[in-house]
Figure (cartoon, rainbow, N blue to C red):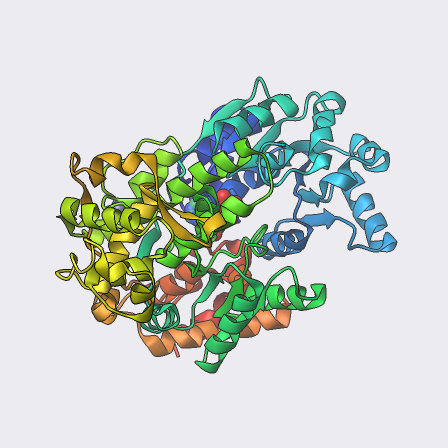
Amino acid sequence: MPESVAATTALKILKDTFGYDSFRGPQQDIIDVLINGGDALVLMPTGGGKSLCYQIPALVRQGCGVVISPLIALMQNQVEALRLNGVRAEFLNSTLDARRVAEIEADLLAGEIDLLYIAPERLNQPRTLALLQDADIGLFAIDEAHCVSQWGHDFRPDYIQLNILHEVFPDVPRVALTATADARTQAEIVSKLELGDARQFIAGFDRPNIRYRIALKQTPKSQLLSFLQTEHENHAGIVYCLSRKKTEQTAEWLGQKGFKALPYHAGLDSDVRAKHQSRFLKEEGVIIVATIAFGMGIDKPDVRFVVHLDLPKTLEAYYQETGRAGRDGEPADAWMVYGLQDVAKLGQMMDKSEGSEEFKQLERLKLNAMLGFCEITTCRRHALLTYFDEDSPATCGNCDTCLNPPETWDGSLSVQKALSAVYRTGQRFGVNHLTDVLRGVENDRVIQFDHHQLGVFGIGKEIVSEEWKSVYRQLLARGFLRADADKFGAIVLEEKCRGLLRGEETIQLRRDIIDKSSKSTAKKLTKTPLPDDIDVTLWEALRETRRTLAEEQGVPPYVIFHDKTLQAMAEDMPSTLDAFSRLPGVGERKRDKYGETFLKIING
Ligand code: ADP
Ligand code: ZN
């Protein structure tokens, strides 16, 4: 097919089938390469629009597009969503019975399938390979391609064997796709899948619609409640906690406050887990309170917030977990509360963890990067992208430090006092005791250890306890102090504090934003996907209609229409089918299937 014809066909499919007007970022170029028979490696952040990169070429090219995906749970949703757009899509995995498999195989051989999703372990069976050899295959898409990498976090042995595709089908174009950033994984994908000649499309990893915010942990439950009530009423979201028990307690408590919150962790029965996950996908406004066991393969597009009640151990984990918010490109929040207890707890956990010294050192470096990220006074997004080796502007305008620049103060003298208190009390005490000593509090413990006799006793009365805790937290986070696991978490000095202790160096500290004004700042930051001038009654009626249709068809509401499409309905209020079909996300099939129903709601 001449290139210009291919490009016009691709654009027409984008509009007619998927209901979008233009390609995003590198989509067009990737699609061109594949249509013309070339291979491609695609790195795009979550929500970037990877699926269309192989779905459209599969529709343009002769033959069936085969998609290898490790996530059996998601195949069904993807296939249903494609079918609602009029695409002939099927999946082959272990959930099907023999009769259904035989039907699909026959359809494939008859050339009646546009897109076929297959799990990797199935593809590697000789029987499947023989089937594909008999069929007309237009392209192979290897989704979640980082699973081929032993370095990464989701290694799947079956992925290694996917290089067989290259040998058995030398003329069929292949595209490998992933959202995993680092260079080592990229290199492994290229070598293991023999994609040396593939065009590489490495998009940036920024998620501009996610607003990064980290608040000081004071009363975490009520901070969470106020965040949810002021900004995310009726929204779907994920709340991450460190322990199983805490996920259950938090879910129960949110339930009492009127939220639809469900726990999720590895200790729950698998059917309870499956039920909770399915409710999260299919119902609206469900909050999952989870340990990190939850998330792999959740590609629900309308997750509006990801909360961390406990600090993740690495920035990689933070980025991956927060990345589950806002895949649909609409505004979403990554919101975390963090405090002194997190710093001390994680540090100790790391000291006690099994593993070589080398491994522990690496873990510690990663934790330090995470802590540094919490304490910075400059743009969070810039720091995050810099950590992942990506250039970005110094400010983003969509994180807490950009929106409410934190104050800093010269903490040199206070730090000297804080460090002296650690030193003079023998490096055997925790922050509370040290604070009492500095503030000159004569309690039993202070007297028991004769600390009221020390020179440091009462030298820090000018600062309140909360501020001393803030000083200690920042010193711990920045590696001047350490909570020693062998001494029950006592604070000890690190070599690098020497200059500060002697008063030879100065230090700027972050002034904590004490949460007296959580409501007012929250207001300023609020941005729900619903613009102010939309008629709320109409909006609710549209959602209700979508919900009913979704239930009838047994699919999640967003598979019918995304929020963005509903929003456009409420804003533009189309009165004809023609106008309806111009809304984003409305292709021909959905116009015919749902147009009348929604027009009736819109026009009364
Ligand atoms: P990824 O797989 O990269 O995480 P998806 O393929 O699921 O992302 O796409 C994310 C969202 O963006 C989907 O809702 C999709 O419909 C939408 N999208 C993709 N490409 C376009 C486009 N060109 N115009 C408008 N929306 C798009
Ligand atoms: Zn910023």
